Image (cartoon, rainbow, N blue to C red; front, side, top):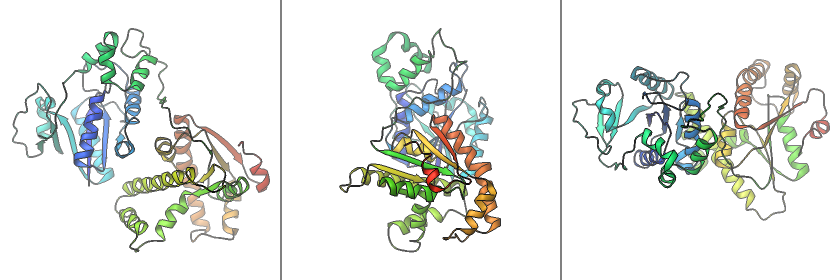
Length: 400
């Protein structure tokens, strides 16, 4: 498989970039297209936080088959040098282990650094910029790409003041609104209060949605099933979705093939396995929600989900609909261990050593990452301590 890297100032991002992204995915079908904002110009105006926000807003306007392939690689430090770009590429290559190619415009070839760059490069011809032949074996010109009229970032920023008609052709309305809301590229610009919170309008679901998270042994699966049964809602365990796929291992059916595709990479590349698993779970949820909305039985319009992890909330909102609140069930470690050791349907790894390991992973990794994601998305987190409560007492704590 091949991953693409696309560097740019994106100050601001415009519709021409979106055309390029779609072209690259349609023609080359990369596994991932990494978008990386950098400070490679002297005329950078907007801070990187606002440029990342605008990239996310723009990507959200694309259809799922495009935006799911595109990732924003947010550098910990603002990249200003070509050495920094190479370090980013090295980082991505180290994580994903796949072939990596860098996308540049022919205007960038004036910088000799690309002739020595240690990764393969695809050059997109740009209007008004000639492509100079190079002896470098790592550079390939894509002659199929047809560039639009080239407009510099500075020229586009000038249109913000006096050419609304042209502005509408260059940006999606959400980007124009964002620029106006934060007074970007104007004398009134004030970046001190800028926060990386994306004002995206997600689809509103016409149903009750209960999402449960919590450490192993917190009772979320039992509580989730009881809630669903009491309110006649559908119950979904994301872990069960994968286990159903896993049960088809070696069989010549759709789930069996998907299992081979996902699990086959587990021992080779854990990061890639995690991404494939996330995508599988989300596709299963999309199908379930579509079927549930269009069903003809008398089940109430509600779904209870157990098992979301980091990134699932972001993918759910982008692909299915808005999440208003999430419930986290909390329990003391010793009580959780006792519950799991003594529960009737023990898992194969329900021994003390593995239980302690799973609890530690949740508290030190999964839990913290999920809390951070919910905060960034503006999703309300409601925490319920289940230590010595009966199931009835826990259920009565839910605000539905």
